[in-house]
Image (cartoon, rainbow, N blue to C red; front, side, top):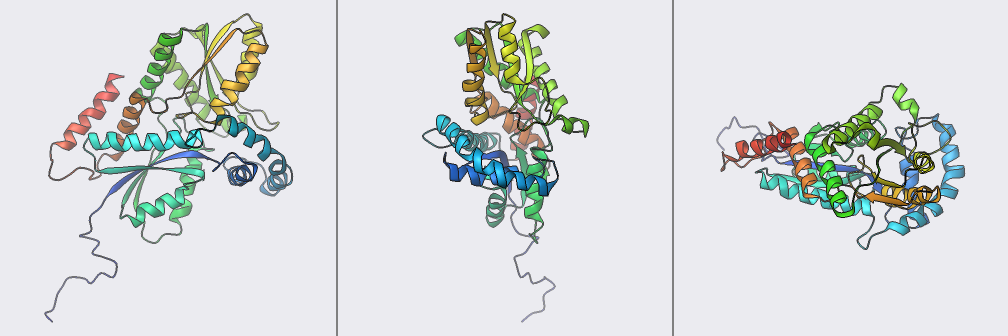
Length: 367
């Protein structure tokens, strides 16, 4: 046998293996079905995350397993059942659809990239999707959280899940992470367009309430930028819509426990507005990119009832971005910017790179 200077690779020729790139779109998660057992599994995973509940672990686990997981699953299951879609949980339905549409949009822009989705809690898990991508030969992965505003309780927790998986893997793919896009022109433009479209079809209320998911106030004091990023999103959307400061109100919803959370709280604010004589309100949830329990049940059902009971006459919930074409274009453009420098274009089409770059830049400038 002739002597060769070529190295003998046990697991493939690394220098010659074809590389591929993926975008993993990560959302919070959802139970597999609207039943108490499914909610118990989901809540046990969700509420065990130390990023989510930042109190002494042993004390919290005693409370979680001794009280919360004995009471809350049945109540939460009933709420999920009230908003469950024929295809499944709304959050999963919209997340899966967004990933599929972004995949198509990136392809249209000339990127040879596969976009899929994962859930931080529940199925499909981030670990299982990363393992699948690795088995498929993917060597570069962009982690795209479905959270426009950065918070350690959400965005950082997604990154934790990636790091936990990576700690057990010998041959790792390259990773990039998107921290936030709370002020991205495409995202702001998509929000404003969805609100304007709703107003054109249903009329505009006296007050627009922008409700974001709440977090404990302590997170702000510890340096979490979430509070500030929510306020910037609300301000930019209001400016895009041409609203004065007295025409809109920012609030925080989904308070859990007795600790002080970011204020003002959504439901008490709506009750207060009704008491002040405001008869009509429109409520939108900019921090949620797809409709879910927190928007369809907590806002569209519970908050509506509170406002009307307090004397309000008309409560309108404006749906999340879901699968709106403008949002899909914006999400793909954000992904494309973070993919810059990775070989995601066909070598047979040297013009594709410039074309997709121009398209992504044009979408941002247009807004």
